[in-house]
Image (cartoon, rainbow, N blue to C red; front, top):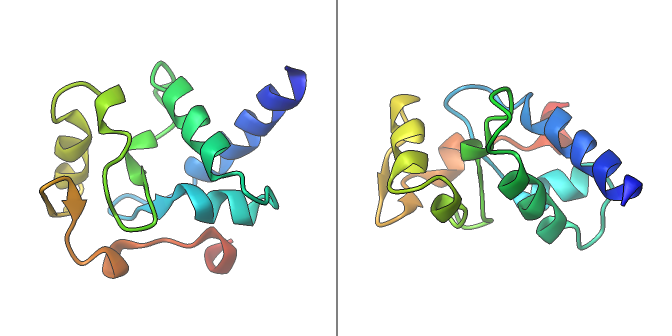
Length: 108
């Protein structure tokens, strides 16, 4: 269990670096951290982070720009948070995803 907590901490550190108005994917975070096949663990970390105000989990989406974690926010809260940062969302998908995508492998 301690390894999972340490992994979650590493994930949270990356998520905290995502700039306002940008998003990244579960897989991009996992790849940056060297967690082969770790996209699911990143998802678990995001689901567990909703009580942590300093972790902007709403900025982490799937590789196609879908708001797959939206149910953990309740209602349309994930979409509202993204739209407040200037990101357009339609049918649970980020419009012009490539323009908003932040890749930790090239940014950090």
